[in-house]
Amino acid sequence: MGLPFTTRKATQADSESIFNLVYELAVFERAPNEVTNTTEAIQKHGWGENPLFHCWVAEVEGTIVGIALCYIRYSTWKGPVLYLEDLVVSEAMRKHGIGTALFNECVQFGRENGYPRMTWQVLDWNTPAIEFYKNYGASFDSEWVNCSISLQNESME
Image (cartoon, rainbow, N blue to C red; front, side, top):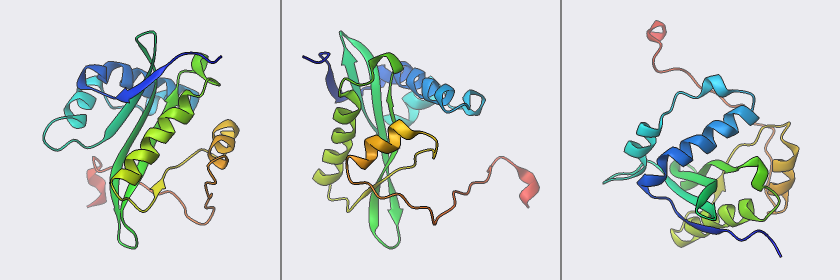
């Protein structure tokens, strides 16, 4: 029998636990200094009249051990698309089906809301995650290059 856990829609009171798991992911991805988000920002942006994201949590004995956080982006070719920003399960809690349950929460949300697809990114060296997504029949695109700019840099003008 596996480890007993539950999943549920996150609440604003979960913001600190969400932030802590995001930070744990940043450490795993070798980029903890890149995290500029805060618990307070998560509280502000995830709830209220126009939340910027949807989030589900997994709990073991009342402790949040995993999250799936997604938001809606718009594709001019496909229309609204569900974007999975982070799927994180605390390292000690992996291999118990928690990631699968959280991923399925996002998939179900997307289907219920009529989104034609869900997209996400995975680092090319994260073999366990790649293998996990292959179980869903995910396609991996090597054609596109990720790009970003800092909007706080005034030297672009």
